[in-house]
Length: 449
Image 1 (cartoon, one colour):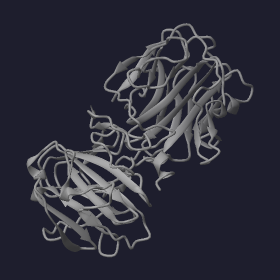
Image 2 (cartoon, rainbow, N blue to C red; image 1 turned 90 degrees about the vertical axis):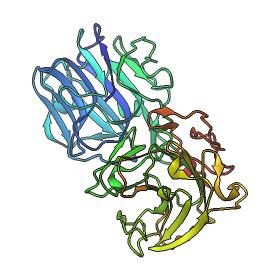
Image 3 (cartoon, one colour; image 1 turned 180 degrees about the horizontal axis):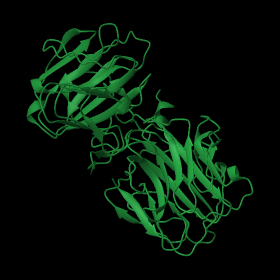
Image 4 (cartoon, rainbow, N blue to C red; image 1 turned 30 degrees about the vertical axis):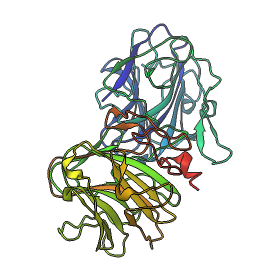
């Protein structure tokens, strides 16, 4: 896992500090580090997600500090705002560490062991290492981070870093908080080309270990990814690269996205990196995660639980759609998907008309024109009350890998070449989205008509 580190100088005030950061989880396993300060393994302060989804703040030096939330935070589709604020000179022990989640102070912990009076935590000691995205003796953070603030010398509240959007009612970042950083303080915007740069004015730039990518996904505009919670419990595959790469080597399983499409027009791209049987399309969000492997009938969801419309790449030139276990041939096309590994499959869906368009490497099948609403490769009738949702599934071949770009701007860890946005200026795609078709992200979900 990637992480950032810096050796601390003389602090402004070693007893007081604040960390504010926005995170979006990907992996749901292990003790995933958010930040850490340490002299060594026996002298460390850590903030991290536990395996069960709870959050911990822990110190093993100068007296144990152990605060573990009773609530679990396991939503891979959500951005969380976390604020850890400490002042160990406070008279009341419960005021010595304050922990906020999405603007609300967390008060229920088990265990709930607070710092002693004037205890110095390991986060801000001269010569100690301060790390972002790692926990001492554990694993690195697997997910997205934005707007990481470290404050040396003051205990701030969550309201200094975030506020409630008047239109959506969602807790969002303050782009330029009015805070004083102190000598060791720093502000990481994680901007493209400046992932380790300190924007606090202190020039406390950090050192980078591993690969970190600057994506379009952020706390103000949440993009779709594959959903690790949507998969079958026996799925042996893995998700990586911010839950945009799905890999499978042993059997037939499938994955769907974190965001659904209740209405409007949407565009996304998938690169299949090997010549395998890949199924790409949409299904209803409430469908059962079950892939019938009978060769005559591939479908997602048993009869009555939602239709599936897909491209089966192993057939090379055939398009099929499946709706409640009913096979309907949609015609034969000239581009052989199966003979073109690393080709980019384009998908455009008009939910309101039910028209789906697909193409490869910039060329739409059936001479279709999605912007004009002509030449669709299939028409979808959704009788379910549940909205449609993108999915990817694999057949019985081995070494299957697909990389999706819902607008984040990468296939795996490779930046798209063209970096084309949709008509609203959102997302980064390899090919130009048809006029009126948008990236699947929360900004567009509010303007999908």
